[in-house]
Image (cartoon, rainbow, N blue to C red; front, side, top):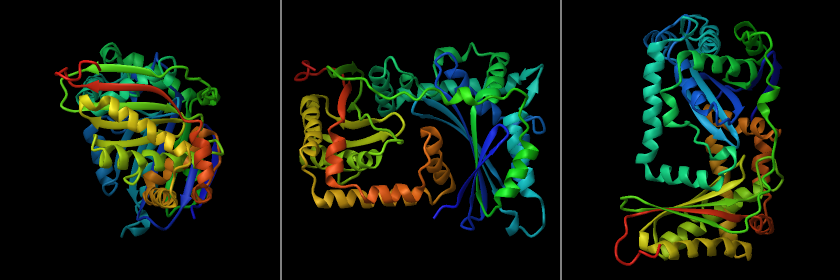
Amino acid sequence: MVNHKKTDLDGITLHTVETKKYKTTSFVLQIKQMIDESSVTKRALLPSVLQSGTKDFPSSKELRSALDDLYGATLNTDLSKKGENQVISIRMEVANEKFLSNSEPVLDKAFHLLSQVLLAPAMEDGAFKESIMKKEKRNLKQQIESIYDDKMRYANKRLLEEMFESEPYRINVYGNEDEVDAITSKDLFEYYQQVILNDKMDLYVIGDISTDEMAEKVKKHFRFPQGRNEEKSSGPKTKDEKKISKVKEIFEEQDVQQGKLHMGYRTYTTYSDNDYFALQVFNGVFGGFSHSKLFMNVREKASLAYYAASRFESHKGAIFVMSGIETANYEKAVKIIKEQLEEIKNGNITDGELDQTKAMINNQVLETIDSTIGLSEVLYHNVVAGTNRTIEEWIDGIKKVTKEDVVEVSKKVTLDTIFFLKGASTNGNENI
């Protein structure tokens, strides 16, 4: 179904998917390193600085112009947290030269541009350009501040800080606002040099391409400095063994119309485990879809919530329940949410719930891999987890999950922390 090939080259792993499905060629460069509190803010700033100019195209304007010359190619960067890793993504999409009327070497120019973004950034006086730093520091601060204004994201951030208080996973992927101003061009450039020397790099190229040709282009354009050593970047694989003796309950009060109830569960199962498929189906039955127990019982039947859903983090093995409720309904909502987990543990899952969930997950996977970005993300799970699971195995694994498998995996799911962002006290809910 997906013709994915992996080629280890000097300093970088090339992943190719040869397909005639798309009229474009997509590049996704994933740069992985363990979350480190001392450098998390610098790392959050880095992708936008790299995207703002290169040696040959030293300003955003010139870089945009170079992309326009490549028949409207696109370039963007992103930052994500996958398990205990802070991952920088650089994505580029260009027209497939086979569909162009002239024979311009679009692919070669695209490789040159992408390699420049990574390896030849715009510089002055041996560091990043001051004008770029100023602008991107301001943008990063705004991005961090925006989390506070979005109460759902804020409640999620606070839940993670409380639930994983002594683990790297608690750290916000965008870093700390109060550290941004102090980062100098020189500081960031020194950090960037460490990234180039030590981080795990995976480049996905998807389109009507040939793997051999792509490998030659990577060798030609991606020249890494001497001493590159990415072994340190993978970090130790630690199993979550924290046992919960008492559920932590945290309340915070703000002037909000709607209370945000966020609950964090440890599952002791991650992407690399055999019962991962069963956990995926469990999450779908529990709160992942509109037919799930949380949606039907907390929102529809009890009318307690504006929304109620669950999602899970494949590489940390955590499930998060999110619900918007009236502050006065806190006790009732928590009780009904807890009951839904017990229902599954007791085997109260209908054939309809199970079949519908598996069909929805299957559709979700197929929909995701329909786009080049989604496809590269799904394939990248293997790198993060240190596994080698094909998409066919994933789809087949979901299909084979039984009700008993879901019940079994649910028995490991344990509530760790409840965070409730509630509205200012009014009569009738002072006890919360």
